[in-house]
Length: 374
Image (cartoon, helix red, strand yellow):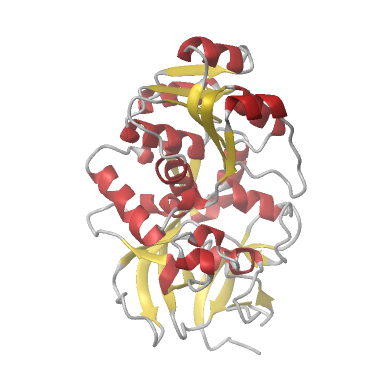
């Protein structure tokens, strides 16, 4: 059914596996029920956007991706109660809000998580965007599809933020930065005086470094192979950095800490690095895993080391965050000068979206943010 009577937009469309983003004219329908129409100011670009473009995750194409949107509420559906036109908002992941995990405060493990974030349609199987030919474009990516001038989200994944915060910088709080910081604060519960290691010093890993400093860890170790990232890690609060291309990170961490770290985070998605992170834990240490490799990837570890050391390995989605609570807390920390995530960000114009993707994949830019509107 055509929705061409909807709102004219520009959208970056992914039409085939591995193809570049193409900015096209399209239309998006008006919000209904609990939906929110957001005029997008800027959108972060995340590793997940690229792995979906390259079809490591089976999101149907053609699609409008983008899942770290920030913007201004333009219109609301009739069931929306807590948001108003003109509100500044950050868009985050989709969840149903009524299953057992959601009811228990664990929306990141919603029973409908995959469908609401990766199905390419709304929960009824319908798309909200059509191209110029009237053909549907798969959307509702992370319940937003924010590589566009306008996006449709739902009230529960649309988070109001203070007007004094710089809206063009805030989008990554909805996913990547929330993931790294939340893994430290919500999942691992890093404690004051503890020893922490981030395996991978990309945007997620460095967000974890920032959060470990907020949490009061006294040994904060960043492991990566890119010298510029390690230099930035020191600027952001890492007490030690390790270039694992030149140095055995496990042996070095054991030497620095006198036996291993209390907490570690693996954000690279590489099984060999995951093994290093397990080995670097001290007794009763805990490892959080947030790196996303292709589906079906397996890893290995020494079972007796895990058993006798009382070690814990756990997967973490979206930093175990309750977004309506956690994202405003991160904004407050930023405004207080205690969470300098802006140092991870480089801004790109909408028409330069493919350059942003290339720079991200080459490790030139930690967290690209695409400026889309005002």
